[in-house]
Figure 1: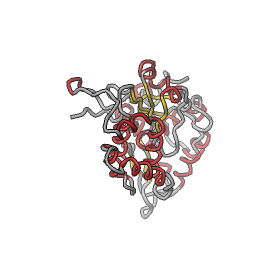
Figure 2 (figure 1 turned 90 degrees about the vertical axis):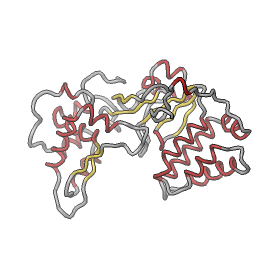
Figure 3 (figure 1 turned 120 degrees about the vertical axis):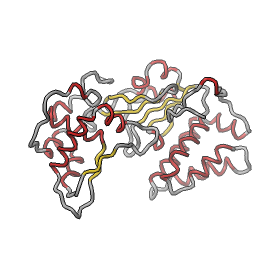
Figure 4 (figure 1 turned 180 degrees about the vertical axis):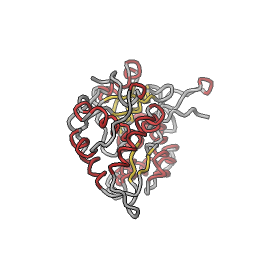
Length: 303
């Protein structure tokens, strides 16, 4: 099963009856395959912090959970609050809105129901933000292991020259290879799939992603994004290649490491675009202002 049809996270109206009370949350989460989450709840905390964002401007999963399933998020928050060993001097426990909704479903329907979809390593349904390259992004509910082609849909899949898996912390894959890939999010990467249609410039889109990532990086990511704007400038192309190769080893700074990995994948997937920019031209089709096109990675209309 790929796109889920059974009511889960995005169908709060299907949740009937009052929530269960007095739930022993820890064994339920362990049986559901979420032992790491159960262990987190064993640590003392003074309160629960609700994470409403995703830390990635291209991802909209948590805000969608809050908008579409507020009742589940509230139920999960009550379960977590009851399970905590509350200590005033302990740090707060931060839990994402989507995770709280999953906790509420497990408390209602049990671990076996939760594990009925997904994989042993990644059980249950999850939310994924899908950018098809035109229009605003869509948040879909699916399971890890779903083919990328299925998540994008037939038309965007056919028209994709490349696909970005993981948002600003992800990597580019060539279209044909990406469409045959099953979606398995990397640790620490956003649950985002973004198609880049033919006619779009891979250099420009990579620069946009680097600018979104720059505020979280200690490396010179903003300078790299600026260099991408003018690769024909003396030394610009060498600077970009040298930085991406060296910074990909920066395990001390995960955000910069991810940005460098993204740039390295772009150099491999869009060699013709980089060569064109180094020669002061761009092979991509111009985007007319009159069409009111939507940026494929952010869902933000250009000025």
